[in-house]
Length: 154
Image (cartoon, rainbow, N blue to C red; front, side, top):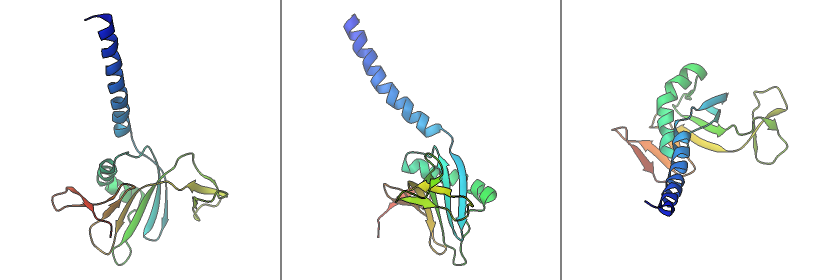
């Protein structure tokens, strides 16, 4: 193999391996729950390093829902069985209200109680039906066999 071929091969390997390595790193990093803000059967969970893919988000929820119930008391279904949990990107932390599109939490006794609105994932259940998983890309539910099924938006 000549020098020119070795350089091409090295560049090709680099171009392929770097993005693959980055994607693998994004997929295996630990999710950090920063805070949970509750209001009845609604909860906002502020997170860092949430999974990137829709399936990754759903699988993370399925693997951690019992831990969230034990540690934070969520979900807390209403009398009719429904609940709503939205996972928000904590980003650069809490901020003052000031900016137009911020979500502020009334349960904090400080003026720095808002985050930039960047929803990552929502788990919603109406009545006692199956949970609906909502991402930027789509809506999903679990099939009887545990498979993830994309749901049409009605």
